[in-house]
Length: 117
Image (tube, rainbow, N blue to C red):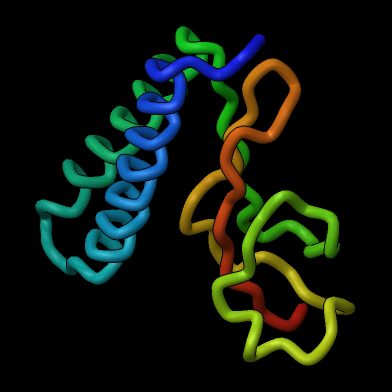
């Protein structure tokens, strides 16, 4: 299926929404009060809704958190200047998911890598 302006807009919106969710996750992780439980629940709900809406639009989101890194992953490495080799690395966190439509990558993901412990 060819890309339509509507699908391209959904891909862009999804990428921005995922960035916002990841930023919020990090902020919630730093919270140390009773409000963090409700924020975590809201994040889970929002993430679930995003996946459902994307599936309705024919998109699949792939996150690579804590997976072994291999050079052919459809991602851009945000901290590539900090890694000397691609061996022994794992994805520390996914900043933007890889987005798949009709079995093809329509948006590359963005990840941070770290050495396997």
